[in-house]
Amino acid sequence: MNLILLFEDDFINGKTAVRLVGRRFEHVRDVLRAQVGGVLCVGLADGRIGGGTVTSINGECVEMDVVLSDNPPPPLDVRLVLALPRPIMLKRILRTITAMGVKKIILFHSSRVEKSYWKSPVLQPEIIREQLVLGLEQGRDTTLPEIRLCPRFKPFVEDDLPDMAKDTLQLVAHPGAMEACPEGGGKDGPVTLVVGPEGGFIPYELELLAGLGFIPIHLGKRILRVETAVTALLAKLFL
Ligand code: SAM
Image (cartoon, rainbow, N blue to C red; front, side, top):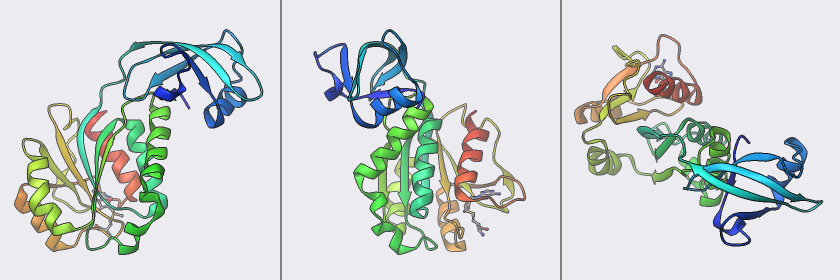
């Protein structure tokens, strides 16, 4: 936890004093080993970042006086359109891409996504939110990403994706594609990046995406796991 993410209901006097209990308190006590007078990096969810000076700490809670002075880091200008990964991998991917600064995440169905994944408890809003919060704490950010679930491939690709991807660089990651992922390709404007499921896209899906203007791109000859491919793609495009 490189930043302690605060929420409005952590404030005890309306403006600057906060009291933390539970996971964040235990982290402050056991990992950061904060003492009264110590200053910790804090940020308000969907707000600014700053410092929290510890004013008291006991067996149950920590209290801090916070000053929120700085903007969070700039987001990556990307819509990440991801075929729904297996639930355990989804949790890791959500944490990683949130830490990297992705703010628009679209999870969609495709032929090689197992239908049962859509019934996973991991898709419950509170579990998704937990991963996003962990990602923000890791990346020293405060802006919660938006997530959209699109459990039907054709209506999503035909009706929603064209508008979503309008005026963006449209890329679909596919091993064996002719073009390489453009280095720094995300630095000149918005990108819509489509990433496939563990079993890859079927030809029909790739054709439909190509018909909308999505350019297939590769990351070299090795086939990577989805979580590795997503990280490598974002790094190559934006970092
Ligand atoms: N056998 C599948 C195939 O050939 O498409 C492998 C799919 S891969 C495990 C899962 C997804 O990660 C792919 O659909 C693609 O979006 C992305 N990916 C993995 N390795 C990649 C690479 N070398 N180049 C581009 N995309 C890659």
